[in-house]
Structures are given as C-alpha cells and as structure tokens.
Amino acid sequence: MRFVSRLLFILWTVWRFGLDDLALSGLRRRRFALIRRLTRLGRRWQDSRGVRLRLALERLGPIFVKFGQVLSTRSDLLPHDVALELARLQDRVPPFPAALSREMVERAFGRPLEELFATFDAEPVASASIAQVHFATLKDGREVAVKVLRPGMLDVIDDDLALMRKLAAWIERFSADGRRLKPREVVAEFDMYLHDELDLVREAANAAQLRRNMESLDIILVPEMHWDLCRPEVIVMERMKGVPISQRAVLEQAGVDIKKLARDGVTIFFTQVFRDGFFHADMHPGNIQVSLAPESFGRYIALDFGIIGTLTEVDKDYLAQNFIAFFQRDYKRVAELHIASGWVPPQTRVDALESAIRAVCEPHFDRPLKDISLGQVLMRLFQTSRRFNVEIQPQLVLLQKTLLNVEGLGRQLDPELDLWATAKPFLERWMHEQVGWPAFNKQLQKEAPRFAQLIPELPRLLHDALKVQAQRGGDAELKALVRELRSTNRLLSGMLWGAAGFALGIALAWLAVQLLGAGS
Image (cartoon, rainbow, N blue to C red; front, side, top):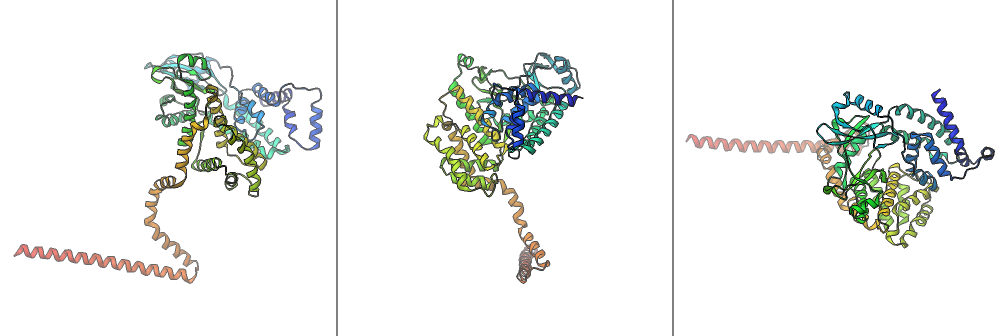
C-alpha cells in the first residue's frame, strides 16, 4: 500500500505541474502528439518548463530534490534553461525531531549522549535532505559539529529509485531522445551518489584527503575529523566558525579584502584540479564560509564533502591536449581528440565537428580576457556536441559544473575578476608537467621500480617465449635462434666458470706462497 500511495502521489504531482506535457513534447510520433493535445485540454501553465520541473521536485520531497541537484550537473544532457533552473534547488527540508537525533547518535556509538559530549545542542544548525548538523562540545572542551543521517532514508530511497527506474525505462523506450539522454544511466548514477552520501564515513574520508592536500595552501581551512567518533550514520568534526560568503556586506565591514577573496577562490579550485586531481565539487555559497578569526582572517572555510570530483592521469592528459589546442585555435586537433578518445562515433566527419567547435570558441577570442567565461565555453561545447552524439564523461561534466560555480562566485565578489589571468600560471605549469620531457621523466621515475624488476628477467622471458614458439611448430629461423641462444648461454657459462677457476687458482697460488714464506 505504501508503494501504491506513493505512486499515486507522484502521478498527481506530475499531472499538476504538467510534467507529462514535458515528457510528451519529446515524443515525435503522431499518436503521441495527439495524446499531448488531448491532455492539455483545460490546463494552462504560466511558469516555464524549468520552473515547473523544479517546483514538482520540491513537492515530491527530499529524494527528488537531490535527484534534481544531481541532474543539474548534467548540463550536457539538459536544455540550458532547465539546467539553470534545477541548479537553484536548495535542500530546505524541515529538521527531524531532536529525540530522533539523540537516538541515532546513541545507537551509532552504543553509549548515552552524556558520556560522549559535555553539551549537545538539540536544535540543528542546518538541515538537508540526507542529514542535519548539531553543534556540541566534547568532554575535553573542544567544540565540534555532529552530522546525523536522516533516519529511515534507505527505505524511502529504495522505493523512489524503483519508481525512477520504471519511469526512465518508459522514457527510453518511447522518447525520440531517450537513447541519447540515457535516463536509466542517469538514474544509476544518481543511485550511486545517494548511496555514497548515505555512508558518512566516506564524506569524512573525502574531507581528510582534501585537508591533507590543502595544508600547504594557507588560504583555505578544512575541518578535522574526529575518527574515533565517526560512523556511517554519524560523524563528528571540528566546528568551523565563519561568515557565509554570500554575506558580502558583513565581510566588507569586517575588513576582508574582497578582490583577494575572489582571486583566492580561483586559486583554490585550480590547485585542487590541476595539481591534485581531487576537487570539492559542490562549491555553492551555502558550503563556503570565510573566517574572521585573527589567526585565520580572510581564509576560506570549506564544508560538506559529499560530492568530490576526481581526475585520472588520462583525464588530465586529455584536458592538457585540449587546452593547448584551444589556446592555439587548432580546432581540428580538438575534433581529432574527441574522435580518438572514443567519445564520438568513429564515422563522424572531422571537418564537421571542427566547424561546430570553431563556431563556439572563435567569438570568445575577440573579447577582453576578463569577459571570457571558461565555464560558459565548456557548456557551449557540451551542448554543441549533442549534435554529434558525443559521450561526455561524468567527471568532466562535474568539473564544468564546479567551474561555473567558481566563476559565478568569483565575479559576484569582484565583477572585474580576470579568471584567465588568475588561472594562467596553473595552466602553464600543469601543461608543462603533462607534456614533453618533464612528463616523460616523471613517468619514467614512477615506472623505475617495475623496470628494475623486469629488466633482469628479460633474457629468460625472451628465451621462454622463443622456446614456446618453436615447440608450437614455429619456422626454422625461430628454432635456429633458440639453438643459437642455447649455444651462447653455454659459451657464456663456460667463460664464467673459466674465469672463476682462474681467479680461484690465482688465490690458491698466492696463499701457497704466503704459507711457504711464513714457514721459511
């Protein structure tokens, strides 16, 4: 009954906000067009399709809100207006009762709350779809933040995901764009994100890694995790005190250098991406604060590490080559890289893809550098690539979404921010490390231990391979080569034994002379 009632509520919400009309608009067959006209009778909507979708997701509850947030990162799959509207989704979820928080914490640690904390604020300071946060004080006086997983989430998630899978299968079967949009893969990706977030220890591990990476960069603070108080349902971390970065007036009144703050934000992002390949992928204003404490005045404070982006060496190499080609205006090379990477069907015409990329990128080179948005360029590239069935990699879409967040945040703080000038040193150093002799030398040093192990084994491996080939009926030349190799081995062995015998004879003769001399 719970499943049926939930399904009926979802269907009513879909009808109320006209989501059925949005779905039918993508169906090209005539019978679906007729069904769409019939279902629109008596219904009118003043809001745009993106607004209606956002309101419907908010109405359906926290899981659908989270789905909209994840979907908003896939701007390569969505129309621009829909992606922008979904990006406005916020986790404005009512907190669950304090008694439930207490119960969750005590169950996670198997101890009463009074044995764990000196104080525990029952009123949460933040409440989201997955968890909520309480402030507390440890027995030794240290102030901490306690993040508690929302109870009963697993059952709700599994029920809603089952419905989403059925809806995705229906869309993929009947929609003209279904195969390209891959709704079932999007739902599977969302499933992975959600279940990752349900394990708060994973978030704590992300925070610990980011904290280590940022230790040498004294412009950002990451809370320290108290690992003895971290469980999948509850994590305890250092309490961070700062002002939300969106409160610009408060920061200016406190004396924070706003222009430097904007530059520091870009520096943090490009350091995480180009140096570490491990970046905070949810850098919206709600997760960023600024410290006003004297010892860390003006530094960024990063919060909420549930979504982290990673880049492999292959990703970095692809990005490096694309950046080089882009700066050289070599659009043919960009097109060739897309095809060579397998993201574009092999039958794609290079000249057609090159022309489309040129149309996106070329207008930007005639504008002042401070007016160029790298995030917008990437978004336009992804949207253009839809014509060519480009398979955009999720990690690069996450990178593009985070870059848009960073650009928007930086230019809210400083409208004159020149993103390219701030990023240029990182790009140049990164490209220098990724291509040419430095990259080759770095890779050689990395592989040196393996080479040291393999090189002594090469003669034996070569001999074994040739022997096997000869036993399988290889040609006469291979057999002759094996015989010659054996003969050479016997010759080398004889020479080694002869040298050893000669050396032993000399040593014995010297010893005999010494003994005779001593006897006389």
